[in-house]
Length: 409
Ligand code: NIG
Ligand code: FE
Image: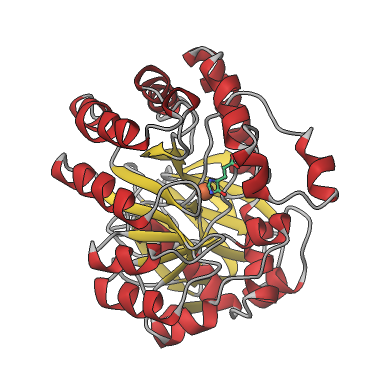
C-alpha cells in the first residue's frame, strides 16, 4: 500500500476515454491532497486534507508539490541501430529531410545499422533510452518497428520491445511499421514490397502476438494513400488496429484516410488540411502531435488549436528516433506544445496522459489519477501545473511511481 501525502496540487484528466474540445482542458485540480494505492498498484482513493494513516503503508511526502499522472509517450521509434549524427551538417546546409532519404540516407541508413544489430544489442540500447525517459517522467511508451524492412529484422525489433517490456519499469506498447520506407531490395518494385507486408510480415507479426498496432508512413516518395490503405486494411484483418504517419511534410490524404478507416490515431499532421481534421473528428481518431519534430526539422507547428476546436482529441508525444527527432524528453515536447501550439497547460496535461493513453488503447487503465486506475504518478519540482509549464528546459520531475512503486527519484 502506498500513501502520497502533502500534495500541493493534484492535477489530472478524468475518465476512460480521450477528451476533445472544451473537455481537453477540463481537468480536475485538488489542492492540499493525498492519494492512496493498494498492494496491486491500483488507486483506491484521492482526497483533500489530511491523508489517512494506514498501518504498514509506504508513505511518500510530496512536500507541497504538484502531482500528475505518469507521462505516456504515444509515439516513439525506440528500437534502432546506430545514430545519424553525420546528417546534422547536411541539415544545417539546408538539405531537406526527404532528399536525404531519397539519396539512400535517412531512414535507410538506420535500416542498415539495425539489420546489423542483434536482438540483445537492440534491447540494450532501447533499455538505456527507457531509463532516461523514466527519469524524465515517462511511465508508458509506444514503440514502432520500421528499421528492418524485412521479415527477420522487423520481427527482431519487435522481439526486442517484448524483451524490454517487463524487464524494466516503463510499460511498452508495440506498433508494426514495416511500411516506413521502401527497402533497397525492392527499388522499382513497390507492389512487391506492399505484398510482402500484407501477405507475409503482417500475418507473422499477428501470429506471434508481437504488435497491437499497424502504422504506415504515408508521405511523398514513401507510401501513397492507396498503398497505406491496403496495408492498414491488411493489419485490421489480422487484428492490428490502425495508426498512420499522416501529413508530416506533405498533405497527400493521410488524415482523411485515418478518419475513414477509423484509425485509433493519426500522427504528425503538420500539414493536415481542414478536410483531414474533419475526417478525424468524424472517425474518432486521436491526433498525436509531435512538436519536437517540427522544431528539429524546422517545419511549421501542427494546427493543434484548429484540431481541438474541431473536436479532435489531441495527444502530444516525442517521436524519439535517430533522424527527425533524436530527443526522448517528453517534458520538452510539453513545453513546445504550450508555447508553439498555444495549448493551455491543462490541455497539454490531458494530451500527454489520458489522450496519449487512448491513442495506445490504455485509457481504461492509465492516464488519470482516479480510483480503479493504475497508480502511475509523478511528483514535480513545482508547486502547481502553471509553474511547471512556465519553466522549461530542465528535468522538473522529482519522483516517479509506476504501478504503486517508487521507480525513480
Ligand atoms: O516519425 N516520419 C517517419 N518516421 C520518423 C522519422 C524516422 C527517421 O528519420 O529515422 C518520424 O519522423
Ligand atoms: Fe514517427
